[in-house]
Image (cartoon, rainbow, N blue to C red; front, side, top):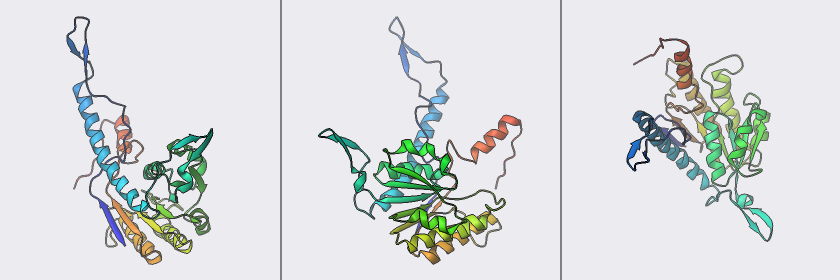
Length: 270
């Protein structure tokens, strides 16, 4: 078993270009003039980009380890050869990413595609995974239906895959999508399907606070899920990220939504 922990919280990759730092403009008289944009905006953009680069580097490090399964990776570039389009994707391995269309999963999918992997993004609603298509070459990323509560769909999703990554998680236990069903039994189903399919590498994304003795049901379920995964696939890589935030997160965006509706925002300290 390998254990990886991300001690730094941040966006896996925050798109650049939304804010620009202040630059000088030259007036008609030739004197430099500052733009009217506040200096703080540029400083905030710079800080966000630095955080983004740090977290994206950690994501890349994870994918580099996966590349050892099939040797050196090749980027999904195409070229014209004698009038016909050829692609080196034919030389890439196949990776199945459960939760591929999700917040964390989409960045894993993008990095895998950039490194030349063919990606199968497994989701309960593959019809909502259209945003993944532009991340790779034509036909490189394919969304398939899979539900962790139905083991047979997990087996179909990992068939023929070299690598499997489970990025599925829920922040609240509601109805059938309970902590036990998703974090424990769902993780077990993915690990068992990967082992039975002869997958070479399994990566399970857990949480930094995973602890069977925790008073929080979320943390307990994460720890139980890790144990279930290792029981089925002892060589699995367990990743324990801290709070991951970014443009599509459900953490800071939730507080931002509350702030727009109310002048008072509850904040729990420790």
